[in-house]
Amino acid sequence: MQPLKISADTALKLSAALKVPVEQLMHMPQHILLQKLAELSRPSSGDEAAAKDADAPEEP
Image (cartoon, rainbow, N blue to C red; front, top):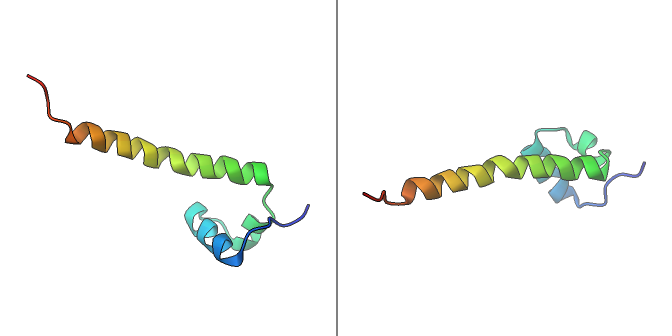
């Protein structure tokens, strides 16, 4: 298996976001990395929806 073809800067940012060591990230299969990124984005999109609901005025 070949390492991912991403820059060192991108690898550092992804490893911090996913909370995995850079070495593990670089040898992670691409489909697993995409799955983890999708999981990482799900909670943030849910927080945005909750924030939109909180900002909306209540109807009488």
